[in-house]
Length: 335
Figure (cartoon, rainbow, N blue to C red):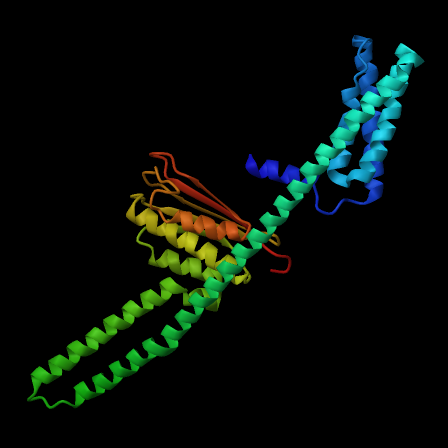
């Protein structure tokens, strides 16, 4: 409901007014419709001038096109209003009626103009805040990728090299020194475990498969490693912006982790589809449900990440009915 309201507000109140011709057409259309409405209403209540009806067009034009166009619409609406008023009540009430209507129209213009200014400032602030959040997410992703690269090219490679050297040293130990051979073997095994731990740490910082292959292969890797069987339906056949791929990857990773640890699920269904304008995903498990955004599931951080990309994440988790996560992230043209 909030998204519908925001879209309607953005459609009505714009920082840059539409072309003037559209304003003229809109004003004339409103006045014509208002004349028809008042004509019908006066058949029911002849004593009512229905001046408020003629303020509707003034309100819309003032919100979308600004003060100048609103004044012109006010004068045209006043003419239509006076015409109805003059026909029914005579010329002696013409001037008072006109003054009352124009005063109301002027107040409407002033109030709507103030509301338009504040709404425009709020929309501009929201846009700047969204851009700031996106820059922070991008910077964090680049830093994480740099850490992952340093671990892979530095510490992990050094550990592999040391392991190979110790294996060679182990092989050269004389057979009559089994204790030294065993100690070297244990050290090599420890280095191998350390290397595995660093791989897991590196994958948590920034998955290398995501950088190399993109979102599709990365999700397939997550599915293979999942403790819960995963059915996949993927339609992501190209590289997406890095920030989008990272956000989508961690949503799937978190959802699969929760399904294994908390949901007691037997299966998880993951679908992802990238169109020209949007990435949509759905992750649904058949577990016990009852999950919540703020209940320690980790999804609150992912919600911030997705919304920083102007996306939307929705969680449905009724008790006994499993958990479903839906994600939509807009894609830039050509992205």
